[in-house]
Image (cartoon, rainbow, N blue to C red; front, side, top):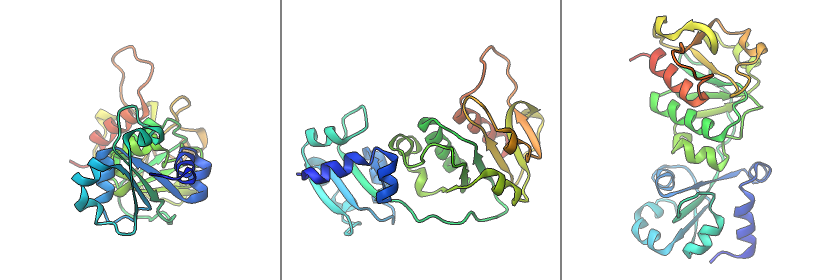
Length: 246
């Protein structure tokens, strides 16, 4: 059973200001929790039902540093941000901030992505395609928002995520810079590239002028139907599939 103070602490982590203050975030749901438990990443708290703990004892024992709290399903239900019944919730320390490495690899640069679902999807896409670096502008949604962590499905464990003014980052980057726009060069006519920066813009405003001005090429996914635009996560997935080496 959790104390009132522990309950209050965990509930507070749904807010970015407290995640920033305590430098931790929530990872919840069985698949995501098991990803973290099977990793070498440090874990602060494991809050789980008795049945779940019994079924996953070997994974839990990998993390002697974590405080384990066995709770009733109703207690966990009061803490979870998920819509479906949940059996486990982790509180995980945020990784230390690191300088962006300048390597001959693919990068994603995200210009004020606001939707947590889009952000999580893009992290998951980067993980799928083996893109090791995502650079987020300061105006992006918090990458440790519970909905982002849920959508990313463990991608935080394998993808380096950095925050930087994109003009500063792009100005110091020697790789080709490809900006996703509605009026760029058709992606179907472009060659696959060994290393580049793919810039994905805000859901409603697209890539900002100051960031787009630094792109070496603009790319678009030609529209054949009547949809006004594509979801940012969908666009990122299509462009990665068509631009990255096979």
